[in-house]
Length: 84
Image: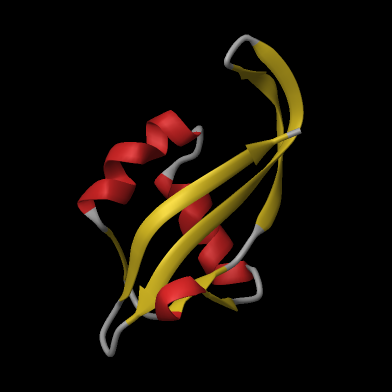
């Protein structure tokens, strides 16, 4: 697997989106990739959460990174997180 680099935007947003670099890397390494808009790639992974987020309790979350694959690395553009 190629090394994974986080863009400045994606690194800054991880905390606000409720996920971590480790969860994003795990998702990219283990989930099926699909085409996304603007010639990007996305994947999704459901993760047990069992905690509070924004004053509400959630059992699970889905981590959805958007990234590009370059010749020598994978670059994460942004990350979406869905809680339920």
